[in-house]
Length: 169
Image 1 (cartoon, one colour):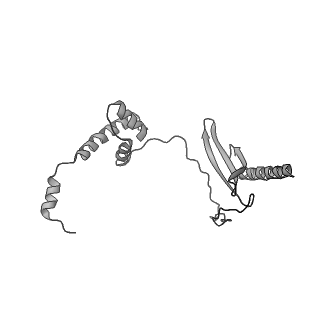
Image 2 (tube, rainbow, N blue to C red):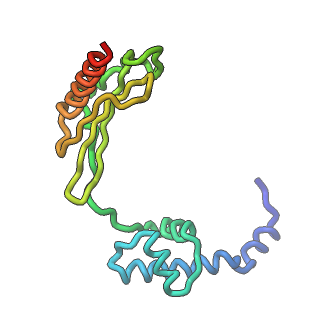
Image 3 (tube, helix red, strand yellow):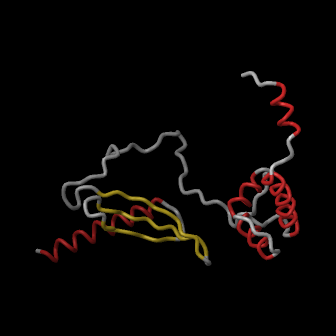
């Protein structure tokens, strides 16, 4: 692509835009607030601190200007690892072939588990869901993440379904 020399020199001589000047001033303010607060503040807290100083700026602008120098806030806690790969590297097969439909109740159940951070620690919760009705048929909560968590949720679903059938009979 060819550019005329006059275009190049005109762009080089042009003064910085209003946004670029404001961004440079904001970057200095953001870095100042970030350093004054032990380099732990994230975009939301820096944005609030700037508002308290009387500087009006959008939070997304603070996020953008924090990304440029690569600064970020501290994230509390350690990351949770809910999926641990098998030693041989093989994953469990997709038994339903991504077809999450069922023609009748109790024809297909799916299970999943997640974690919920609480003040007293992390709680892991497993659910077994009937695909037809999207009803939770079994669940279990525990403070440890073991295979028995999901198996107990499945057992609860089986027992609950048997009890429901016996009540109808």
